[in-house]
Structures are given as structure tokens and as C-alpha cells.
Length: 118
Image (cartoon, rainbow, N blue to C red; front, side):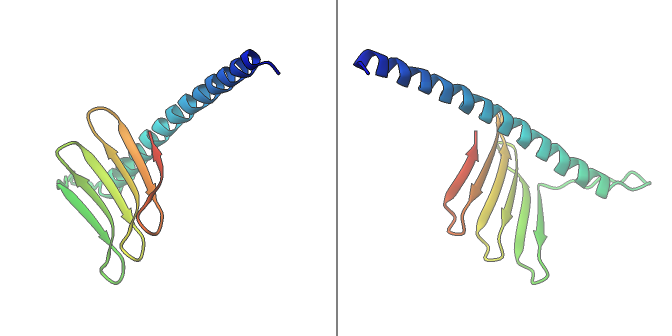
């Protein structure tokens, strides 16, 4: 195959990969938004009482039966965040929303990032 045809084929494959990546990022952002809405909705419904009490806080911490922190919902200067930890206290999932866009991260058992969106 001549060099020019190889370059054209590579350029076409790169364009297809770029389109697939862009679609994947869009899908991940929508997934993040839906998860956030589900968490906020479940939280709101779980604490809704007939006397219309409102719970306000800058941070919520969930602990397991041994008192170890397993999840934290926190309000930072940039926006809200959700952090989930494994039984060893390592961050395994993080979701944040700042002024520009929502972000999600997953980590392995050593705390190294294995996936992120966007």
C-alpha cells in the first residue's frame, strides 16, 4: 500500500476514534448528572418529613459499623463532591461538580486513578 494511502487510512481511523471518544465523554457526563440527581433525590426523599424540616450542612459523613468513614458528601469552594472509600480507607470513587463541568474518578486499591470522565 502506498504511503499516501496509509496516511489517509490512519487519518480516517483517528477521526473515527475522535468521534467515538467524544460520544463516550458525552455519555459519561450525562451518566454523572443522572447519578448526582439520583443521589440528591434519594437524599431529599429520605429526609423529607411531614413537618418540612430542612437539614443543612457543609459535609455529611457515612461510617460503617466499625466507625470507619466510607463516604463523604462535602461542599468545597469549587462545588459539591462525593467521595467513597473501600474498607481499607482508600478513595475508590469521587464525583465533583465545579463551575465548568461535572467530573468522576475511579481508583484502584492503591489509590491510583483507573478511570475518569471527562
